[in-house]
Image 1: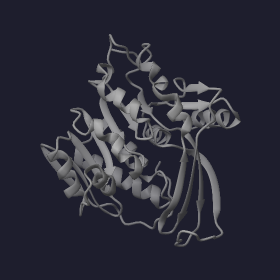
Image 2 (image 1 turned 90 degrees about the horizontal axis):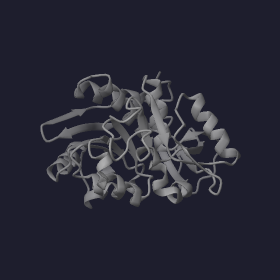
Image 3 (image 1 turned 135 degrees about the vertical axis):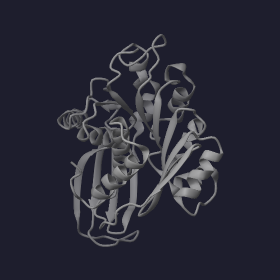
Image 4 (image 1 turned 120 degrees about the vertical axis):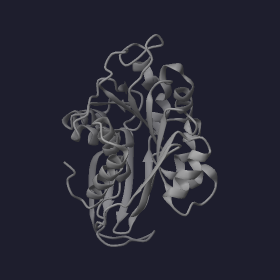
Length: 298
């Protein structure tokens, strides 16, 4: 076995989130008072930070610049208990950023400036080549999280490389616009896809009426396992041998950015702790609802 198998690699975006929030519904073009915060973000980071809170040991594989923003981001990651020992540092690339505007009616608009992750490409996978996590002689066999912010070439490399063939892949598209990047994993035998109903529709160029309908379509087309969420409507965990559906708790929506990542991380943590699928689904929905309501999930 490779070293560090107790670590959970979270591969993808680690950046600064700049989030503006207004407490009432907003429309495109509105100019409203509110709050603007800077916080650690990116799908890989959000999942990793939540895993820490559930007692897991994540490590992030990403690219972070050596600029001031990068140094502050590395320190912020460490303060959250996230291992950064395998992060690729590049002096020629700036630290990535994400900017979002939210109202009481949800996300209004967002821009992801993740060019450094795109430019770094497969360099961030070095720990799977040099023995720190795996090598060609010792393939990786643990849980690993893949973020759809990764370049398509990197996702394709992971899908095809034997070093990842036995990994328990947990994959999330990051946004509807990047859902189609997951195509190489749609029929991977050990992949679990975490997507919402809209993203499922984009993968098959259709509009599903429910998470159950979307999950059934993915499994029928060869997916090994999918978890499909649908906002405040029921979510579904489906595989060829079992289909589970559960209702999210009803809460007042205060935070949006990062809710899906919280769902994914809490689900992974519940299963890693040995809980059954039904419990893990309910736990993930509860954690996501708590996050959306603005409460502390710890």
